[in-house]
Image (tube, rainbow, N blue to C red; front, side, top):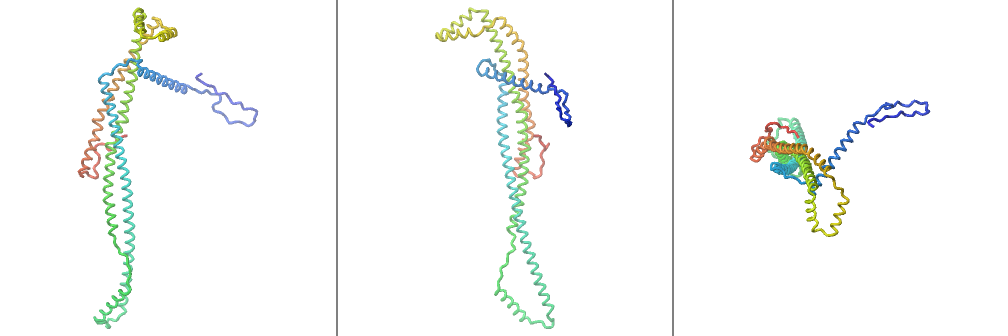
Length: 373
């Protein structure tokens, strides 16, 4: 049934009204569910048929034909591109990850240097302010003492010398320990921070160029063009196996019909085959013939006719898959030698400038800076 009726609810004898059910008396369409089920069955059937053909090919029950030279070359190119680009991409990603990790560690180190410098400079600034206040207080005291003295009662020069000697002797008699206001270490730390910050900007620029000009283009061609070519290869092998199976079936049916038309030839071949078989083997083969029903010539002719009618369709699909496979390889080579080369050439130029130290710190990427992943 394609539809299902939803029965109304039995309300019982309860006087209290029940909430209404919007699905009462309506029908539910299950076409979508049955469509999904049929699609799943179709996929499962196709998978089983492909598995059977794979087993037949590996066990020699299908006479597989040789690939054309251009197809064999396409397979070699595809395997080479996939293996080499995948290896190159993995190493490039690891390299850029190490650059990013080093950049993060360098950022933390620069922050630590700046913090050390700022704390030490702040402490020294407080010490300088305290010393400045002490000097101002001493100057004010000396100024007040000078104002209290009478200008007409000035002491002679020898009295001034005696007063200075007394003050010096008093200073030596009660020595005090003072903190030195030395900011040389903080200045060196600040210099290291500034130099590393410039190098950090260059490291960030190297990471950006490596990601945009090397990693992303390689990831694009591997995930899109090469994976598409791998799908075309699988389809080609699948359709070629179907074509070979049909050709093998036609050949086997023709041989069986020929054996029926020429029984003497078949008996002679069978005798030659059984000449080296023992008594037990002959009994086993005879018992197998009794169990196996031999088809008639008309049945074999009908099967041969059906197989020949299906052959053009297999040939068409097989040839189309071969063309798609060769086109996918051409697309890989075109993108690799035009688009990817465009970005990799820029990265090569940047590496040369980086090595010689001639790269400008703010030179933008040539062309389009944004590469879609």
